[in-house]
Image (cartoon, helix red, strand yellow):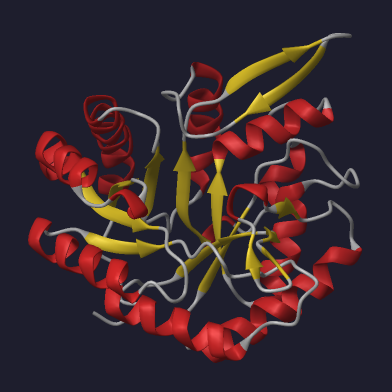
Length: 287
């Protein structure tokens, strides 16, 4: 299938820890059945063995593969490595993934993948041109679209609106977008803002092709400090679900709703996939 020929592919997705192998992915596929349409693979550029393993899994289970590389440093300070980009393009081709999804964050430092220690993009206007140029360069080398995702913010630099910054980057770079609803929920709580902003209407929702939903947890510290933690270890909580239901009908080109829940049991993760499929199917059938 051509990377952009996705007009008929819509549905729920899930992800597991690729490094741990196929056991959980297989168990969720058994339990979720036809509710699952996509599977998201998060690997490093050199992990061809895992790319081929999960490509075969997707073919056997009749799933389309999404690709979330965990070492594409789209917002970092190191120069982009064209050899690494070409390797990521090869992994995307092996998975037959229609795009590569990447958080707007520093993923690498001096060539070392930061993984759980990634640094989110500063919420400042100056980040737009810098990031857009790197996205354009990456797409040119990859020969495949990028979809940029709002990252998790346990702390912030700047006080810009992340969706507005994403809108400007996507317009300059001519790329796609992914909305992580849990990340957005946590950031707006951190900023002390209403969960839905008037400026949300201005986002180019036609560029949104992927959505992520996962559980969040309030970590409470002295002096009434609350940090919203989103580590994929809990089911989706009602406030995050409500935010998704309020925003996502605007995304008429949405193709995949991803249950990110590497810390959940197969039964819990399958239940999330089924819930997502049941909730979004009526919208897709009407569009």
